[in-house]
Amino acid sequence: MSSPLRIGLAGLGTVGVAAIRLLDRQAEVLANRTGRKIIVAGVAARDAGKERGVDLSRFKWFADPVELAKSPEIDLFVELIGGAGGAALDSVEAALRAGKSCVTANKALLAAHGMRLAGLAEQKGVALAFEASVAGGIPIVKTLREGLAGNSIERVYGILNGTCNYILSRMETEQLSFAQCLGEAQKLGYAEADPAFDIGGFDTAHKLAILTSLAFGTVIDANAIAIEGIESISLADIEAAAELGYRIKLLGVARRTPDGIEQRVHPTMVPKSSAIAQVMGVTNAVTIDADAVHELTLVGPGAGGAATASAVVADIADIARGVRSPPFGLPVAALALAEHAPMQLHRGGYYIRLSVSDRPGAAAAIATRLAERDISLESIVQRRRPGAAAEPPGAVPVVLITYATYERTIREALDAVVTDGFLAAKPQFIRIERE
Ligand code: NAP
Ligand code: HSE
Image (cartoon, rainbow, N blue to C red):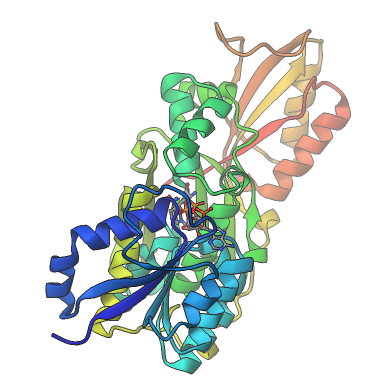
């Protein structure tokens, strides 16, 4: 057996503690599979006195993760702190500069600095591995980078945030409020330290940025992603969607189009009968459309300590075996600068919910504004559902489903409807994605 692989692990929260537990539990299996013992040589977090439910007295404590990252007592640095900058960035950078391979679950860090860190790893001849950064326990990074190396990819999309899918699922099945569901997701260890990253769509965007680079061989450009979160989704939308045969999911979508690569994150109506609509709770699903495999979907736990630790430990095992792939599938210099398809050119169906003043001419005015722009309607429903959230006084809910049209066309039509003065509240619109 080769010499042991000595790990320095920074961040002892949900994922860090779960990783230590998994390394303990699978120590013998991992040694057999990799031909080396994997030992934790040092750990770092903020509070040395915190009770964490695992015995840390056997590890050397480092008050500063950067010192741990540079320590000659470790061979591999595992960053499980979180955040795009600060201690996470400083320690990963220090480890790579010191010629040590790194494993991280930190998508915010990779979306912001992934190219530079991958370049540094390449220069130093070490690994930068981040399986846990996208879709928790689903091995999507390895699937895209290695498993599908012989494919040309057209689209990668899916449910990439466990917290949001958990919230939307619980709101629908248990009729709970948004705040209650978010509180549960936080208690279960799914949410980011600042849950605004989850519900605002930013966490999904960070993951989509990584998937886009892996799928299309492009330089990460997180700023090119159109982002909308789930904050505006109400029980009224979830109920209306259900009535019309849809379910609402927060999707991240990256797609080749004639105008460039479209990258978008937003609440999406998916047909209830579709495979992605069946994905409930903290589960994530990623679908890849590629020329040789056609369609491939991976489904599994998207967040939580144990599932995420599974991906962290898989990266550690690879490094123990001496596996080192280019982090984003190609040498950094070979990654292309992508053309970005603007969101205004996105084409698809739309769900529109309007709170319409109950006055003569309102429906005709709305129909005119849509017809002027050649927007055809698949369905229109105007009625109060029993028990539905109250509309503003003197208003009735109108729900429309359009056939495919352009984003800019729908926005122009809604601006005109607002200007006409028949609405009692801001219009809600949600894009529809059909498989
Ligand atoms: P967490 O529970 O908030 O834990 C963060 C840990 O980092 C804590 O132990 C904290 O120390 C430590 N820390 C924070 N700032 C530090 C600093 N300046 N110096 C040293 N240590 C510091 O977070 P988590 O949920 O485990 O997530 C960790 C990473 O995994 C994040 O990048 C997250 O996005 C990613 N991730 C999480 C999940 C999930 O389901 N939770 C899934 C996939 C990926 P103290 O405990 O002493 O405060
Ligand atoms: N907060 C993230 C989520 C953790 O809910 O999906 C997994 O990346």
